[in-house]
Length: 312
Image 1 (cartoon, rainbow, N blue to C red):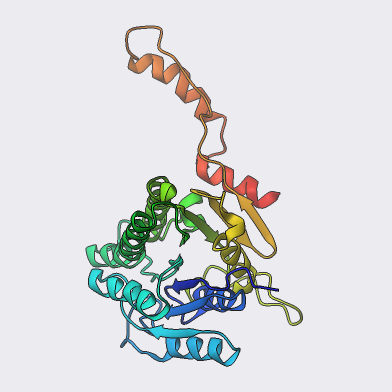
Image 2: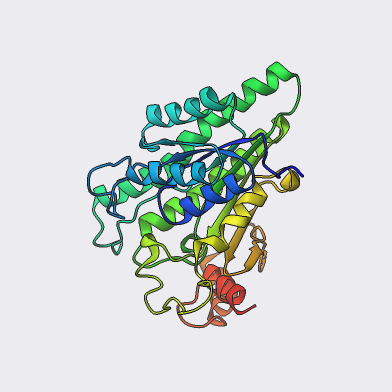
């Protein structure tokens, strides 16, 4: 019996630890040959010297289990190094079929205290890093499709966050980057569909070094699998990368602890029409102020939606 991803090749960024590692192992378990990318800096803020260790260790783990894997230790936020990553997969395995973007850093601070460097660095790694690899993978699939005269196989799985859905007071850079990734994903999904390529995004909730502070009050259970283990997220990535998900495109899914939620695109909640040629201040005050007065103090639309999701 063949495996779902047998004969396919994949690139997973930020795969030396945490979510990326679990995703790389899952893709390999499902039969894919994997390029494990990780810049290898020890600090979750992107600090420290780059190291080949994390990527090499995961690649060795895959090979020890009988799979195919090699390591790449470049910085995906660097345009040329992202190109080299995609070219490495093509050179080694003949083509690239699956791209999983996961690399990221944190530099948390309130918006009134955040420096320009803290903003730029997080946007660079998360959003630009996702764009860089997507750009070169998309060009590869477009060229293959033109040569084949039809659709080819291509899957992109991007990593967003519930920080984008509900906001995160101390993470304006991170929330903005994750929101940008959703926009990049939906645009890519529309642009590449005619070539046979899908692009989807996930909002994972998992215990990693990136989320150590977030889940500090939710301790890992003494027995059994941690509900916040990255291993709960990896199967969804494997599914989205597989032929079975051919009709899943441009979607955003929240995943954690044995739960997957498909996020609906924003809908119009309320609509008000002016009785004049255009709205006046007084008319807007008369219709909008009562509408928002019905919501609990400080609760935004996005926050309300995510709270409802968590209660299901």
